[in-house]
Image (tube, rainbow, N blue to C red):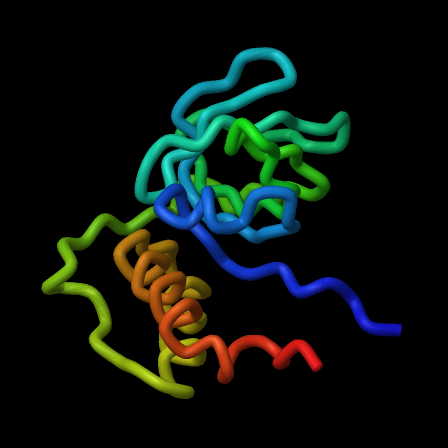
Length: 136
């Protein structure tokens, strides 16, 4: 049994993934009942499930489906806490190819660097053949 691929995206890629399951890493900027706004290279409205327990200003990884209005229906949410590093693009890692995911994942383990996350998202879209199986 194969599971559905969950491409990493941010607000910039939402329209290209309508009605698809995706993975988003961002910062919770507002919480209102069963919805929230997550900053991931732009604001994304997310509709939470009962199991999602987010904290304002924390980093979060969401797996969910992009709705026609470009909001996200959340299936799974993981709160990464408030250990967030903010760097400018010139300070972030400059790697490409296969090494990109490993180096950027290591950065995420040490502390969440949103510039590194943006670089990882862009790398996964630039080098799809490395990160995702081809549709045959």
